[in-house]
Image 1 (cartoon, rainbow, N blue to C red):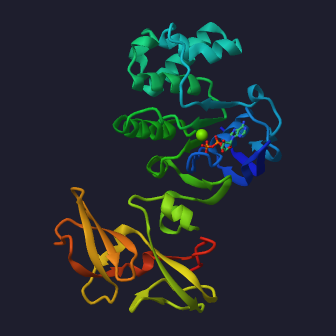
Image 2: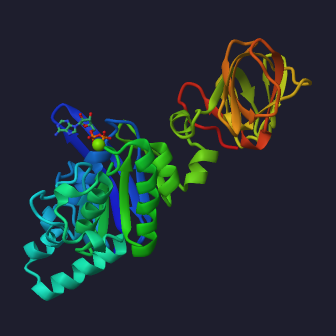
Image 3: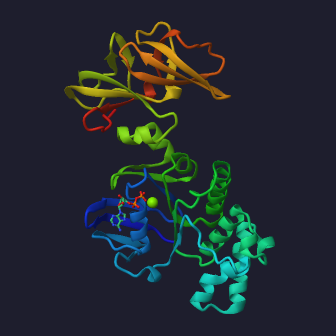
Length: 357
Ligand code: ADP
Ligand code: MG
């Protein structure tokens, strides 16, 4: 296994810049997720790491070796695509063996490696079945078998679960992570699904329009988003943003929204008066009659363990709260809103960047 380092990687197509000076490092054995909306440059980044696309500028290191301009076949990396190209007329054993046969490995050694990969994926009982008779889940496992049998330095996966229905995607999500825990293989996993990334990743890099906006552990990007984009993209229902206008001084630990004084984490910078956003996640909103931040309940949605309440503040902002199901609340109710101060993020409205606190 090996570390992957990407330094100032840049990719311009004739009419479009897909990746803009991205830098990141994937540690040996790490499960690293590239997360972002469709078109943000995830696949292009992955294809450059694989050697399927050449960078316009920048460098890619696999371990200590600069592989930026090496052929794909000369990089010891396995690429798992969304549409697994299995050979339907071959049985499972031959499908998994294929990359080793191409390498010219000795037959009995191939047999051993295939058995080992099948054991790891728990598909030994399927080895002699034709691929055409397998369920989609088992096909997914065979495709993974073909990737792991080579024992590459790293795995690249481009939305491998994208074609599966929601329920099965969740099962495969757990399986992939369990497989990773067994193999401890350096993995770059691309997805537009924040739930997948949150569930599987050691580290998430959130991409937007060719730029990595934030890099961190799932909890870190969730609790301390670096920008409005990240805050909005991660978490469902997404973060609430309450606009207000203020000048703030370093050390200030409260803001005013309308008549309401809202406690926030102490700021680390001075700010001239400007448009700001107070960001708070739905699960950190409470109802508190004493609060001056008044709101009307527009709708309630019962989710079994929690209720999602949609409200409009007196200032006209829509806020969603995720509260205990036993809290009595109905459409038309007027309530006061209070927030968990430690969990609030403040943003500059114009740039979208988080204020330091
Ligand atoms: P993602 O995987 O995040 O959905 P991609 O990396 O596939 O995004 O694409 C990023 C952007 O680059 C898209 O706008 C896409 O249309 C553009 N793009 C990708 N490949 C090419 C290409 N070969 N020529 C021109 N534009 C491309
Ligand atoms: Mg893509």
